[in-house]
Amino acid sequence: MRICININRFTASALAILCAAPALAGNPLVKDKFTADPAALVDGGRAYVYMGRDESPDDKGYVMNEWLVVSSCDMKNWKEHGTALRYDTFKWAKDSAWASDIVKHGGKYWFFATVTERAADAKAIGVAVADSPTGPFRDAIGKPLITNAMTLQTDIGWDDIDPTVFIDDDGTPYMYWGNQVLKYAKLKKNMTELDGPIVTEGLPQFTEAPYLHKRNGIYYLSYSRDWPEYSVYATSDKATGPWRYRGKFMDANRKTKTVHHAFLEFNGKSYVVYHNADLPAGGEHRRSVAVEEFKYNADGTIPFIPQTAEGPPANPAPGCK
Image (cartoon, rainbow, N blue to C red):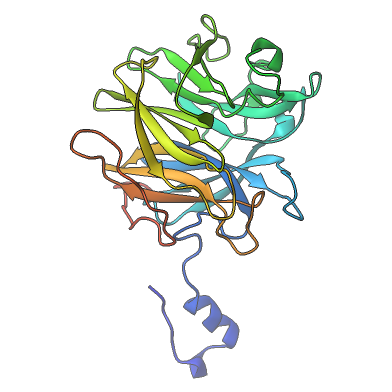
């Protein structure tokens, strides 16, 4: 709601403030910066979304140095918390704050991040940890968890990207990741070591951006398919498959060939965060994180989810401030 009053009683500057629309409401979540590759966490009755910041000056290549974090008590109005961490939180990293994921485990917040390993000049996955969802984060192991040399299924240097980390009901952590080839591994419960071999998983036309979540006994493995990318998913009764391909839930974007998403449950409703490039001057390397509410079908399948400018209606969580 906007509040406007008689200009004769107030200065023009005061009127501008009072008539302004609420900050950070609707899509995209952040309107004065370009953002991409969202990760989501619900903690303490508040929703947090982490996103890489696109800083390309000319939209001709990725320039990404940091991850930002915003939070909400109602999935409509978002509070900025600034920088959660930068790529150089990992001293062994050369550049590239690419896609990430975050989980809470053992009272700490574990941030799994794609960066460029300096020694190999190839993408790698690092692990950072913090005592608060907004940081400060520190490198948990002082070296990559996953390096390009550990996976030899392709000859490209960017096939170890886009981690998604999921902790099953029995406490077992799993990480899926990859570009062109989808891989997964169990993690030890310390969250900083693999607990077994790296396994490859075949899914139709997998490109990148896997996300693993569970609801009502169904495991959902969603990802970006083809090029330009659109969002699809598969289901299973186990975190390791076998997977039944289910089809598309979100279309390709108009102004960028990529799409990246995460699912979350907040205050009894279901949401997906994703990126497009719908801000003014947006483009291939100037993207924008947005959110939509949706309802699972009666059989547990995910419906097609349209992208909107309005985003979801407010869903205030009791006690969240």
